[in-house]
Amino acid sequence: MNRYEHGGFVYDAAGRQTDWLDFSANINPLGLPSTVRAELFKALDGITHYPDPGARALKAAIARRYSLDVENIAVFNGAAEFFYVYFNQLEPKKIFIPSPTFSEYERAARAAGLEINFSAPVENVIVCNPNNPDGRLRSVEEIISSTAATVIVDESFMDFVGDEHSVKKFVGRRDGLIVVQSLTKIFAIPGLRLGFAVADRDVIDRLERSKDVWNVNYLAQIAGVAALDDQDYLKRTRRWIEVERRYVFERLKSIDGIKVFDPSANFILLRFETEEEARAVVEGLRSKKILVRACDNFRGLDGRYVRAAIRLRAENELLIESMKGLI
Image (cartoon, rainbow, N blue to C red; front, side, top):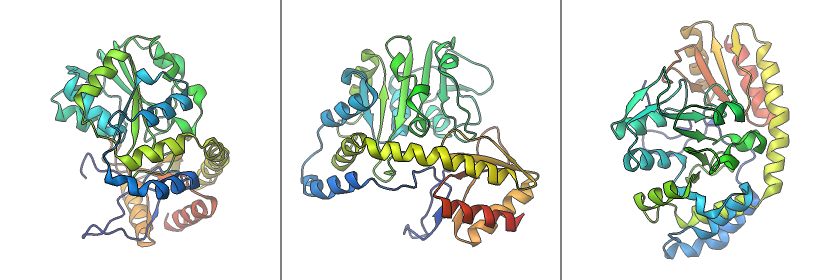
């Protein structure tokens, strides 16, 4: 498989969306917040104008939501864009990427010609917390006490877990700390692409000078403001995930032949006894129009591993019962 293949591919050969029950992408199954939908409809005619190059309303909303200073925030066309800009323009020479983890870090680093170490720490490190795909949640102390000069923490799934596990508040207090986060997963807007970084002001200034001035489009900015101000949606999401991830974990644990990794966010990693069995389950689910994420292209994993998002109860039941029937 392609090392950089991702989940969420719901398109046919002509690029048209097709009808899948998608467990391969870790998107909030509560769907687009009604507040965001309403604001997008109201703002639609505004696409005849350029977006605000300073993304001032969006940065203010991020600052309110996470108790940050606006001057410490840069916004991006999805969290992944940050890595391409950072690696190409701020020129670290080496990077430590613990594996397994999100493959876009490696892709961005290779595009910039960095030396990558996967086994031993070097002066710059990327930490995904909670980690994709295994769900490992590192403690605040473990991250803050790292001996690396620069620690980049991807907290793209942190909103599913809880603010108490975030290290955003340590930016400016711990030298070399950068936090990056996607907003597309928690608010179910991956098609709009939206993320941000929190860092010291000198890093933010260099990032701002290095990216496209209109990198976050008008509708993405509108959606971000509405979503970040919708605290009820976030509370409902937290209530849902606290119940559902434990339910899915316990149900899957009861199936013989599967090792189930304890989830911390909105996805769960499974290991089958053989690669052949894992492939049979993935393909069998596909025949039922159910997508899960084969993990053989995650560095450090092999064909025995499969990741599934946690969705709504009826959908989770369908996945579990279909999986039981295929093993």
